[in-house]
Length: 223
Image (cartoon, rainbow, N blue to C red; front, top):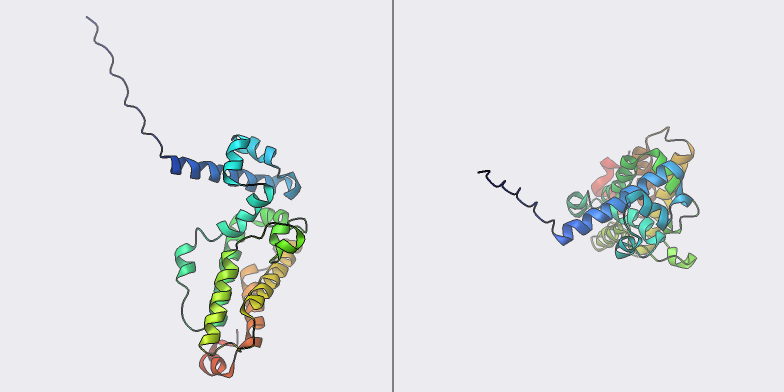
């Protein structure tokens, strides 16, 4: 008499939250590939969904539109650096703020030159620190919030001049960094972007420090 075959154990169900995160990652990965291979304008909801093999409904579950998806790159940069990003401490505001902006540079370098060249286009309104003025939905960029907090703290400690607007200075630094990124893209990545942005951002910040900062950190001002 033949014995009945045992049923293979059922595969464990993937928790809904994990599955949702996996779908979101597929969408972002597909968009990244499209930006690299076809450019910014080719990234449409339909093209992304086709490349990611997900439904349009799944896309809109995670993102409100194309701009929302592309704006995600300005926040996703910090998910891989969360521990380091949140651990920035100490009184050296110049070094700390430069390090803060440096995490985003590291993220772009990981994505590669093709992605960065195609993402950094004048048609991408998410890149503006004042995106709402151009009609785009403002992007909550952790880099700006953290930089503003570091500058405000430095003011409390007497290391940044009190009349400086912390938010405006953080926005200005964001603009400076974007200028360096655009130039790096134009030059096809022929120089060290991280070193360049560190040098320019530090030089800009030093224009706002106080004598108290200079007395304490004068040894680090030669870089």
